[in-house]
Length: 370
Image (tube, rainbow, N blue to C red):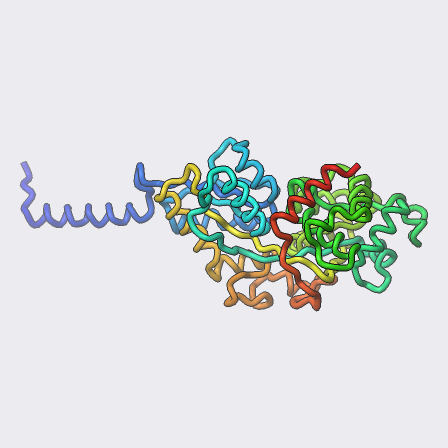
Protein backbone atom coordinates (compact mmCIF):
# COMPACT_ATOMS: atom_id res chain seq x y z
CA UNK A 1 0.00 0.00 0.00
CA UNK A 2 1.37 3.37 -1.01
CA UNK A 3 1.14 6.08 1.65
CA UNK A 4 0.49 9.65 0.57
CA UNK A 5 2.24 12.10 2.89
CA UNK A 6 0.51 15.24 4.13
CA UNK A 7 2.59 17.50 1.88
CA UNK A 8 1.40 15.63 -1.22
CA UNK A 9 -2.18 15.78 -0.03
CA UNK A 10 -1.95 19.55 0.49
CA UNK A 11 -0.47 19.97 -2.99
CA UNK A 12 -3.25 17.87 -4.57
CA UNK A 13 -5.92 19.80 -2.68
CA UNK A 14 -4.42 23.15 -3.76
CA UNK A 15 -4.38 22.10 -7.43
CA UNK A 16 -7.99 20.94 -7.15
CA UNK A 17 -9.03 24.30 -5.68
CA UNK A 18 -7.24 26.22 -8.43
CA UNK A 19 -8.82 24.07 -11.15
CA UNK A 20 -12.22 24.49 -9.57
CA UNK A 21 -11.78 28.26 -9.45
CA UNK A 22 -10.75 28.34 -13.11
CA UNK A 23 -13.71 26.17 -13.96
CA UNK A 24 -16.09 28.59 -12.28
CA UNK A 25 -14.77 31.34 -14.54
CA UNK A 26 -15.74 29.54 -17.72
CA UNK A 27 -18.53 27.15 -16.79
CA UNK A 28 -21.98 28.38 -15.74
CA UNK A 29 -22.85 27.53 -12.15
CA UNK A 30 -25.91 25.25 -12.09
CA UNK A 31 -28.93 27.12 -10.77
CA UNK A 32 -27.21 30.54 -11.03
CA UNK A 33 -27.35 31.05 -14.79
CA UNK A 34 -29.70 33.84 -15.79
CA UNK A 35 -31.54 33.97 -19.10
CA UNK A 36 -32.46 37.38 -20.44
CA UNK A 37 -34.91 37.66 -23.33
CA UNK A 38 -34.10 40.67 -25.52
CA UNK A 39 -36.83 41.88 -27.88
CA UNK A 40 -35.46 44.29 -30.47
CA UNK A 41 -36.54 46.00 -33.65
CA UNK A 42 -35.40 44.08 -36.72
CA UNK A 43 -32.99 46.83 -37.75
CA UNK A 44 -30.67 45.61 -34.95
CA UNK A 45 -31.01 41.91 -35.73
CA UNK A 46 -27.67 41.24 -37.40
CA UNK A 47 -25.41 43.31 -35.09
CA UNK A 48 -27.06 41.86 -31.97
CA UNK A 49 -26.65 38.33 -33.29
CA UNK A 50 -22.97 39.06 -33.90
CA UNK A 51 -22.52 40.49 -30.38
CA UNK A 52 -24.46 37.68 -28.67
CA UNK A 53 -21.57 35.19 -28.72
CA UNK A 54 -19.05 37.69 -27.35
CA UNK A 55 -21.35 38.73 -24.50
CA UNK A 56 -22.03 35.13 -23.47
CA UNK A 57 -18.30 34.34 -23.55
CA UNK A 58 -17.60 37.30 -21.26
CA UNK A 59 -20.59 36.48 -19.04
CA UNK A 60 -20.87 32.68 -18.94
CA UNK A 61 -23.63 32.77 -16.31
CA UNK A 62 -25.91 34.87 -18.54
CA UNK A 63 -27.68 33.41 -21.56
CA UNK A 64 -29.22 35.65 -24.19
CA UNK A 65 -32.38 34.87 -26.12
CA UNK A 66 -32.87 37.34 -28.99
CA UNK A 67 -36.30 38.05 -30.49
CA UNK A 68 -37.06 40.52 -33.29
CA UNK A 69 -40.28 42.38 -34.12
CA UNK A 70 -41.46 45.63 -35.68
CA UNK A 71 -41.04 48.40 -33.11
CA UNK A 72 -44.76 49.10 -32.64
CA UNK A 73 -45.36 45.35 -32.46
CA UNK A 74 -42.94 45.23 -29.51
CA UNK A 75 -45.24 47.52 -27.53
CA UNK A 76 -48.55 46.01 -28.61
CA UNK A 77 -47.44 42.41 -28.10
CA UNK A 78 -46.03 43.19 -24.65
CA UNK A 79 -49.08 45.08 -23.40
CA UNK A 80 -51.51 42.47 -24.73
CA UNK A 81 -49.34 39.55 -23.52
CA UNK A 82 -49.36 38.03 -27.00
CA UNK A 83 -45.75 36.83 -26.94
CA UNK A 84 -45.07 33.17 -26.18
CA UNK A 85 -42.04 34.27 -24.10
CA UNK A 86 -41.45 36.70 -21.23
CA UNK A 87 -39.32 39.70 -22.30
CA UNK A 88 -36.56 41.10 -20.10
CA UNK A 89 -35.24 43.92 -22.29
CA UNK A 90 -37.15 45.83 -24.96
CA UNK A 91 -35.19 47.76 -27.64
CA UNK A 92 -37.53 49.45 -30.13
CA UNK A 93 -36.09 51.72 -32.83
CA UNK A 94 -37.36 54.85 -31.09
CA UNK A 95 -37.38 55.80 -27.41
CA UNK A 96 -40.76 57.53 -27.78
CA UNK A 97 -42.31 54.12 -28.36
CA UNK A 98 -41.20 53.17 -24.84
CA UNK A 99 -42.91 56.34 -23.56
CA UNK A 100 -46.09 55.16 -25.27
CA UNK A 101 -45.73 51.75 -23.61
CA UNK A 102 -45.15 53.35 -20.21
CA UNK A 103 -48.18 55.65 -20.58
CA UNK A 104 -50.46 52.80 -21.60
CA UNK A 105 -49.36 50.57 -18.73
CA UNK A 106 -49.55 53.34 -16.12
CA UNK A 107 -53.14 53.99 -17.21
CA UNK A 108 -54.07 50.50 -16.00
CA UNK A 109 -51.89 49.90 -12.93
CA UNK A 110 -50.20 53.23 -12.09
CA UNK A 111 -46.73 51.71 -11.61
CA UNK A 112 -43.45 52.28 -13.41
CA UNK A 113 -43.04 49.41 -15.91
CA UNK A 114 -39.22 49.72 -16.07
CA UNK A 115 -36.45 49.03 -13.56
CA UNK A 116 -34.35 52.01 -14.70
CA UNK A 117 -34.62 54.93 -17.08
CA UNK A 118 -34.41 53.62 -20.68
CA UNK A 119 -30.92 53.96 -22.17
CA UNK A 120 -29.94 54.94 -25.75
CA UNK A 121 -28.08 52.23 -27.69
CA UNK A 122 -27.60 53.54 -31.24
CA UNK A 123 -28.87 56.30 -33.53
CA UNK A 124 -29.97 56.56 -37.12
CA UNK A 125 -32.09 58.87 -39.30
CA UNK A 126 -34.76 58.27 -41.91
CA UNK A 127 -33.57 58.52 -45.51
CA UNK A 128 -35.03 57.96 -48.96
CA UNK A 129 -33.62 55.49 -51.48
CA UNK A 130 -34.27 55.14 -55.21
CA UNK A 131 -32.82 53.26 -58.13
CA UNK A 132 -30.52 55.72 -59.99
CA UNK A 133 -32.52 56.25 -63.22
CA UNK A 134 -35.77 56.64 -61.30
CA UNK A 135 -34.20 59.02 -58.80
CA UNK A 136 -32.89 61.33 -61.53
CA UNK A 137 -36.37 61.69 -63.02
CA UNK A 138 -38.24 62.04 -59.73
CA UNK A 139 -35.69 64.32 -58.02
CA UNK A 140 -33.96 66.19 -60.87
CA UNK A 141 -32.18 68.57 -58.47
CA UNK A 142 -30.86 65.64 -56.40
CA UNK A 143 -33.03 66.47 -53.36
CA UNK A 144 -35.77 64.23 -51.99
CA UNK A 145 -39.15 65.97 -52.18
CA UNK A 146 -42.37 64.62 -50.67
CA UNK A 147 -44.44 66.64 -53.15
CA UNK A 148 -42.80 64.87 -56.09
CA UNK A 149 -43.53 61.46 -54.55
CA UNK A 150 -47.17 62.47 -54.03
CA UNK A 151 -47.42 63.67 -57.63
CA UNK A 152 -45.99 60.37 -58.87
CA UNK A 153 -48.54 58.45 -56.78
CA UNK A 154 -51.36 60.51 -58.26
CA UNK A 155 -50.04 59.99 -61.81
CA UNK A 156 -49.59 56.26 -61.07
CA UNK A 157 -47.09 55.63 -63.87
CA UNK A 158 -43.67 56.89 -64.79
CA UNK A 159 -44.47 58.09 -68.31
CA UNK A 160 -46.78 60.81 -66.93
CA UNK A 161 -44.01 62.29 -64.79
CA UNK A 162 -41.20 62.21 -67.35
CA UNK A 163 -40.01 58.62 -67.06
CA UNK A 164 -39.71 55.98 -69.77
CA UNK A 165 -42.95 54.38 -70.97
CA UNK A 166 -41.54 50.91 -70.23
CA UNK A 167 -40.96 51.68 -66.56
CA UNK A 168 -44.58 50.87 -65.79
CA UNK A 169 -46.30 51.93 -62.59
CA UNK A 170 -44.76 54.10 -59.89
CA UNK A 171 -44.12 52.01 -56.78
CA UNK A 172 -43.36 53.63 -53.43
CA UNK A 173 -42.65 51.45 -50.39
CA UNK A 174 -42.80 52.17 -46.67
CA UNK A 175 -43.49 50.02 -43.62
CA UNK A 176 -46.84 49.48 -41.92
CA UNK A 177 -47.20 52.42 -39.47
CA UNK A 178 -49.33 50.30 -37.13
CA UNK A 179 -46.36 47.95 -36.68
CA UNK A 180 -43.15 49.83 -37.46
CA UNK A 181 -41.43 53.05 -36.37
CA UNK A 182 -40.07 53.97 -39.82
CA UNK A 183 -43.59 53.96 -41.30
CA UNK A 184 -44.77 56.24 -38.50
CA UNK A 185 -41.84 58.61 -39.00
CA UNK A 186 -42.45 58.63 -42.77
CA UNK A 187 -46.06 59.72 -42.33
CA UNK A 188 -45.10 62.33 -39.72
CA UNK A 189 -42.52 63.95 -42.02
CA UNK A 190 -44.88 63.79 -44.99
CA UNK A 191 -47.64 65.44 -42.95
CA UNK A 192 -45.26 68.21 -41.88
CA UNK A 193 -44.20 68.82 -45.48
CA UNK A 194 -47.83 68.93 -46.63
CA UNK A 195 -48.94 71.37 -43.93
CA UNK A 196 -45.73 73.41 -43.87
CA UNK A 197 -45.55 73.54 -40.10
CA UNK A 198 -45.17 71.62 -36.86
CA UNK A 199 -47.22 68.44 -36.56
CA UNK A 200 -49.50 67.94 -33.57
CA UNK A 201 -52.51 65.74 -32.86
CA UNK A 202 -54.85 68.24 -34.59
CA UNK A 203 -52.87 67.97 -37.84
CA UNK A 204 -54.58 64.68 -38.64
CA UNK A 205 -58.04 66.31 -38.67
CA UNK A 206 -57.01 68.30 -41.75
CA UNK A 207 -58.84 67.06 -44.86
CA UNK A 208 -55.69 67.33 -47.01
CA UNK A 209 -53.83 64.99 -44.62
CA UNK A 210 -56.74 62.55 -44.57
CA UNK A 211 -56.66 62.51 -48.38
CA UNK A 212 -52.88 62.05 -48.35
CA UNK A 213 -53.11 59.03 -46.02
CA UNK A 214 -55.76 57.48 -48.28
CA UNK A 215 -53.56 57.99 -51.34
CA UNK A 216 -50.54 56.43 -49.65
CA UNK A 217 -52.52 53.49 -48.28
CA UNK A 218 -53.96 52.73 -51.75
CA UNK A 219 -50.52 53.03 -53.34
CA UNK A 220 -48.49 50.98 -50.85
CA UNK A 221 -49.59 47.38 -51.33
CA UNK A 222 -49.20 45.20 -48.22
CA UNK A 223 -46.61 47.36 -46.41
CA UNK A 224 -43.94 45.26 -44.65
CA UNK A 225 -44.01 44.87 -40.86
CA UNK A 226 -40.42 46.06 -40.36
CA UNK A 227 -37.79 48.23 -42.03
CA UNK A 228 -35.14 45.59 -42.68
CA UNK A 229 -37.78 43.30 -44.20
CA UNK A 230 -38.80 46.20 -46.45
CA UNK A 231 -35.27 46.85 -47.68
CA UNK A 232 -34.57 43.20 -48.42
CA UNK A 233 -37.81 43.01 -50.42
CA UNK A 234 -36.93 46.30 -52.18
CA UNK A 235 -33.59 44.86 -53.29
CA UNK A 236 -35.08 41.53 -54.36
CA UNK A 237 -37.94 43.11 -56.31
CA UNK A 238 -35.73 45.69 -58.01
CA UNK A 239 -36.78 48.23 -60.63
CA UNK A 240 -40.34 48.03 -62.01
CA UNK A 241 -41.60 46.49 -58.75
CA UNK A 242 -40.09 48.92 -56.21
CA UNK A 243 -38.86 52.38 -57.18
CA UNK A 244 -38.57 54.60 -54.09
CA UNK A 245 -38.66 53.80 -50.37
CA UNK A 246 -38.08 55.36 -46.96
CA UNK A 247 -35.78 53.39 -44.64
CA UNK A 248 -33.24 53.96 -41.89
CA UNK A 249 -29.83 55.25 -42.94
CA UNK A 250 -28.27 52.36 -41.01
CA UNK A 251 -29.68 49.53 -43.10
CA UNK A 252 -29.54 51.57 -46.31
CA UNK A 253 -25.76 51.76 -45.79
CA UNK A 254 -25.36 48.19 -44.57
CA UNK A 255 -27.34 46.56 -47.41
CA UNK A 256 -25.99 48.79 -50.19
CA UNK A 257 -23.47 46.15 -51.33
CA UNK A 258 -26.31 43.63 -51.52
CA UNK A 259 -28.23 45.89 -53.91
CA UNK A 260 -25.16 46.01 -56.16
CA UNK A 261 -24.92 42.23 -56.24
CA UNK A 262 -28.64 41.67 -56.87
CA UNK A 263 -29.46 44.46 -59.30
CA UNK A 264 -26.15 45.40 -60.94
CA UNK A 265 -26.69 49.06 -60.12
CA UNK A 266 -26.99 49.97 -56.42
CA UNK A 267 -29.61 52.37 -55.12
CA UNK A 268 -28.95 56.03 -54.36
CA UNK A 269 -29.40 57.42 -50.85
CA UNK A 270 -31.26 60.73 -50.39
CA UNK A 271 -31.20 62.62 -47.10
CA UNK A 272 -34.59 64.02 -46.12
CA UNK A 273 -34.66 67.64 -45.02
CA UNK A 274 -35.89 67.83 -42.37
CA UNK A 275 -35.43 64.28 -41.14
CA UNK A 276 -36.11 62.56 -37.84
CA UNK A 277 -33.48 60.88 -35.71
CA UNK A 278 -34.53 57.54 -34.25
CA UNK A 279 -32.60 56.31 -31.22
CA UNK A 280 -32.80 52.60 -30.48
CA UNK A 281 -33.41 52.60 -26.72
CA UNK A 282 -33.24 49.75 -24.20
CA UNK A 283 -35.58 49.32 -21.24
CA UNK A 284 -35.53 46.56 -18.62
CA UNK A 285 -39.13 45.65 -17.83
CA UNK A 286 -40.41 44.80 -14.35
CA UNK A 287 -43.16 42.39 -15.33
CA UNK A 288 -42.08 38.76 -14.73
CA UNK A 289 -38.44 39.88 -14.21
CA UNK A 290 -36.79 39.37 -10.81
CA UNK A 291 -34.01 41.62 -9.47
CA UNK A 292 -31.25 39.09 -10.28
CA UNK A 293 -32.36 38.87 -13.91
CA UNK A 294 -32.61 42.68 -14.04
CA UNK A 295 -28.98 42.93 -12.86
CA UNK A 296 -27.94 40.53 -15.64
CA UNK A 297 -29.85 42.69 -18.12
CA UNK A 298 -27.99 45.80 -16.89
CA UNK A 299 -24.71 44.07 -17.74
CA UNK A 300 -25.97 43.50 -21.28
CA UNK A 301 -27.08 47.12 -21.75
CA UNK A 302 -23.74 48.37 -20.33
CA UNK A 303 -21.95 46.02 -22.73
CA UNK A 304 -23.75 47.48 -25.77
CA UNK A 305 -22.69 51.04 -24.94
CA UNK A 306 -18.96 50.27 -24.63
CA UNK A 307 -16.79 51.59 -27.53
CA UNK A 308 -15.92 48.13 -28.88
CA UNK A 309 -19.58 47.19 -29.32
CA UNK A 310 -20.49 50.66 -30.57
CA UNK A 311 -17.88 50.17 -33.31
CA UNK A 312 -19.67 46.99 -34.38
CA UNK A 313 -22.93 48.93 -34.61
CA UNK A 314 -21.16 51.52 -36.79
CA UNK A 315 -20.12 48.73 -39.16
CA UNK A 316 -23.84 48.04 -39.58
CA UNK A 317 -24.53 51.68 -40.44
CA UNK A 318 -25.64 53.04 -37.05
CA UNK A 319 -24.40 56.27 -35.55
CA UNK A 320 -22.92 55.74 -32.05
CA UNK A 321 -24.34 57.09 -28.81
CA UNK A 322 -20.84 56.86 -27.30
CA UNK A 323 -18.95 59.99 -28.41
CA UNK A 324 -15.62 58.20 -28.11
CA UNK A 325 -16.37 56.36 -31.38
CA UNK A 326 -15.41 58.05 -34.68
CA UNK A 327 -17.53 57.04 -37.71
CA UNK A 328 -14.65 57.09 -40.19
CA UNK A 329 -12.03 55.57 -37.87
CA UNK A 330 -13.96 52.32 -37.39
CA UNK A 331 -12.61 49.45 -39.57
CA UNK A 332 -15.02 48.58 -42.42
CA UNK A 333 -17.10 51.66 -41.69
CA UNK A 334 -19.73 52.15 -44.45
CA UNK A 335 -18.87 55.86 -44.42
CA UNK A 336 -15.53 54.92 -46.03
CA UNK A 337 -17.08 52.94 -48.93
CA UNK A 338 -18.08 55.75 -51.32
CA UNK A 339 -21.78 54.85 -51.13
CA UNK A 340 -23.75 57.21 -53.43
CA UNK A 341 -25.36 59.95 -51.37
CA UNK A 342 -23.91 58.88 -48.00
CA UNK A 343 -22.61 61.71 -45.80
CA UNK A 344 -20.83 61.70 -42.44
CA UNK A 345 -22.46 65.01 -41.50
CA UNK A 346 -25.50 65.57 -43.72
CA UNK A 347 -26.52 69.22 -43.87
CA UNK A 348 -30.13 68.64 -42.91
CA UNK A 349 -32.33 69.66 -40.01
CA UNK A 350 -32.83 66.76 -37.61
CA UNK A 351 -36.07 66.73 -35.65
CA UNK A 352 -36.98 64.75 -32.53
CA UNK A 353 -39.29 61.78 -33.09
CA UNK A 354 -43.06 62.27 -32.84
CA UNK A 355 -44.42 62.01 -29.31
CA UNK A 356 -46.62 59.18 -28.08
CA UNK A 357 -49.87 61.08 -28.74
CA UNK A 358 -48.87 61.85 -32.33
CA UNK A 359 -47.89 58.22 -32.91
CA UNK A 360 -51.34 57.17 -31.74
CA UNK A 361 -53.05 59.62 -34.12
CA UNK A 362 -50.93 58.44 -37.06
CA UNK A 363 -51.99 54.85 -36.41
CA UNK A 364 -55.65 55.79 -36.02
CA UNK A 365 -55.78 57.78 -39.25
CA UNK A 366 -53.97 55.04 -41.16
CA UNK A 367 -56.46 52.43 -39.95
CA UNK A 368 -59.40 54.67 -40.95
CA UNK A 369 -57.98 55.61 -44.36
CA UNK A 370 -59.49 53.89 -47.40
